[in-house]
Length: 115
Image (cartoon, rainbow, N blue to C red):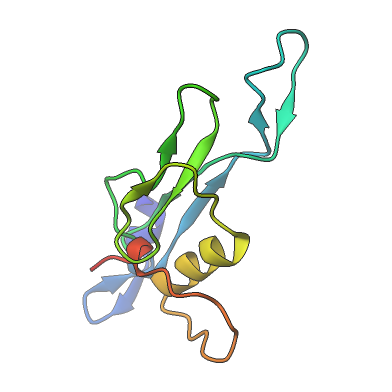
């Protein structure tokens, strides 16, 4: 981040002002597996960027199952039992990056954008 902040883009803006760092997990752990290392496609990710609505968790973790759940795409309110689609997540990230997705058929996810 310090390196990105040091690269001036003009007008008082730096490369960091237009950057997004996405940390993905490769898989989740299946809480019901007692031996070995059960894998589950349910997982989470972390985004670090001045472009996203930061300092909060979208969705949550169900303590009974150990699985994540989604959020309302418009408000960001937690929605236990909701699974976010890949299209929703990618749309939210692209929206934060101000990429024009007109005609792409992606759903709006303004909850991920900085207001």
